[in-house]
Image (tube, chains in turn red, yellow):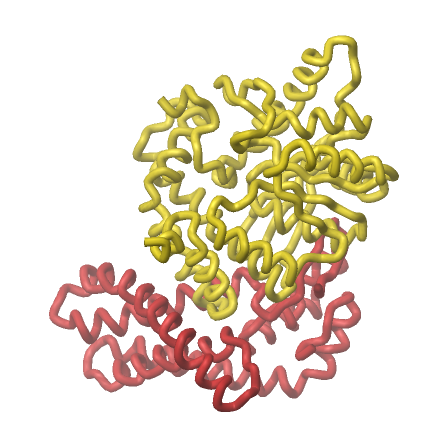
Length: 186
Length: 300
């Protein structure tokens, strides 16, 4: 069990974040954070960040909803189309997740024998499904192309952040260790 | 038709599905999955009605429509809590914790000799016991109601055997008299015994109490044990504060003082406990996972 006890500023440990953009932001916050001695126990896991989980969940749901509204319900008034598309987007993500969980993840592990965690395989598969939807939307001549384009813009920004995080991995590990955390990647 | 049992409310299928979800859902899909499943849980009529009738007593004057939405909030918290519990057991990922009543918590950590941790079906009591066992390195015996479905019971026991900390032992309150002796032995050896004191299961001895102005029955076991072993009772609640965030609330310890009139001594202790329980549930009604009416008056 990995945790930090007594350091509230450890909530900004990059190793508590998953996507590179959030890791980079967490690093910048932690670098400028003051020591906060409080009675807390903070778990260390790359999926621990509350804000990250919510932001990405809302972003993917709304992106999916825009793509559905702008393609399947293109002839409907936008407000009605979006209202119907939000629950459909949520159900779509859930369906993709279950389908990937029972097919892609076991198949990947059977073929590669890498024992990759299901969470990782399903994250890639589900995100790829959204990317495919966005790629199609980006080719449409209507407003929905912006929904597709913003997805790829953020994806590109995240890739850029990943390069920066990789270059900074030494200072990041040092800073994480100094607040009692576990260096990223461990 | 026995294959069908696994799909009933207490069937093993739902535990297996939960485990599958925990091991397969990426972080950014968690809120979406939880929202869908909390809504589906509302279809569980008996549980929904139980929560709604309890809410009428906890929040007097509340309307059925508002309580329907509140019931959804209870189920939303329940879904996150059971997922966090399985995640901890399967992957040893602990949520974040903060404390209220840290002085009592530290007193409990450093307390020499046995004690009783009296808790309720709030947040993740299971997770709390695991955490406490890990950080305090003290031996804890956790008493819990057994699963009614045999397959589910087997699934839970296997999961526990595979994942429990060495310092945590779980006992099921099926064999009342035998268990009472085991627990007495445990507290006399200086171990901590964690018991839920807000709900009774059939076949166990009870004490009358009043909760939110309604007559109810609470388990007599923790109070009798505290009196027999002369150990303090620590009220302790685990409150879910958000995604992977919990608060551990520890109340002031109290004792069940031996007196000539046993009934009066028990009554004083039960009153102390219900006061604590009411104050926590009133503020955190959306965390009380009691899916049956707590008083017969509410069940009518």
